[in-house]
Image (tube, rainbow, N blue to C red):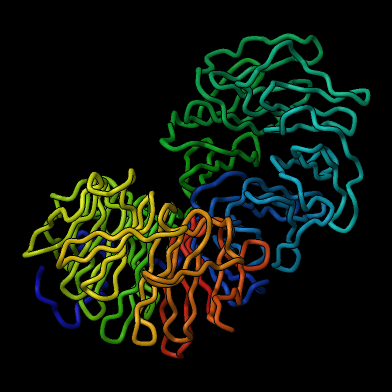
Length: 625
């Protein structure tokens, strides 16, 4: 372990990588500019999520604006002005993950999300369409009159405006639709897990015998029905019910189709091209290395392309990328480097006069300087799956555990030796000033005399199971959470004591030990709820029974416990001799990015306001109180 260095420099401004860090690039005067939404539904919340992962596109034909449904919310792009506005769950979306988007003839924007229900934008706030609050929406489209059509698992609906009931409701054709094409109210085509279905004469008709699960999308254009399949594009001439061959059309997965006057724009096998009735013409033979999810035709010579790695504009002369050029969509000297929305671990480091939030994601390690709103991405952990981050207060060393490369210690400007003796992956990490403990796949390790040594092997446990969490507040008592119960380990005597009662056989996935009232208090999170107490006395929190506990953090400022679960976020305080829930947050009543909480951390700013950082699979959420 190296000696601490006072006042480490975390404020480098060079526009080049230094010591493995990706530093910000200079922003030019003509870079796209963010216009912030004028209002928020949840003013105490803020979300940080990349909007590079596009699921769907929609064009406002009246204004020319482009709307993007992404894994991090909704991005409103003003193409001719290089301006954009971000929307996330603090603006009323039920979480950050948005699946489908559409703009009807009146310019009303509609979205469906990972959660139940249909939402529409009103004065920069997303409101729930109350008539479809409890249905799962799978796709959105508009018909020739620009009326909205909604495909769900319970039926097909036509909607004229946000204030009224659906003007038409049709029964579901079996499985939820993947895509729909509407000519009129009695001429509807859709594809789902069983193939293509046609609604005509008040009934659904399957267009072919047998199940056809390989049809991913479809579109109507004139008298042609275009089908995008796993391996090819198919054109069906509806006047003759034949499928003529398309010359020089490549084989490949067809993921998106957009009609235009001459034919259709098609994404096939990573390429985008225009297809007439008999031939295919790709855009400059450009092949994308990322999935293409959606296309919007501007004309026969121009198309918008939505991918898992951002927005592109294709034309006869070139293909141009459209990026916001700001974090979290671009971090570092390359547009390929951006924030991963799957946040798996968080740690706040307080050094001198500034706080740094360390963020471990499924695709790398990030640092966010809370004092100056500055982002960094550590290139030494490029695309690594980060599972644990730990730092000692007032020390500069950061311990980072990844799934594939074990445990590494970091200091500004250098990288400490890897803890190669710990069996990967690292499942948990904790410690004190000179007392470090790590959980590997084969048991518990202790940092002793500048080396890691196996203290308890999983085979040493008195019951079948493995260690998956560790916590301590005093050096002579180490708490171990295992898949087969809670244990107390005494390092001096090397004694392992099982806890009796309900915790003796529980699957203990997360632990938090704190010093409270001159004693030690332990919180043990299991798949069936939360326990609080010590070796001799335990109590459960009735309001959290049958909830999987996923993350814990203690707020020493107001003596409250924040609990992350698989169904939301909770704040507990000790009142009337029991632990009581005083706040409950989920995607329906707050700006939380996703209901399943993965990680939690706490910081305080100069004004004394507390910031609760919440890591989810859909980005990083922040609650101020």
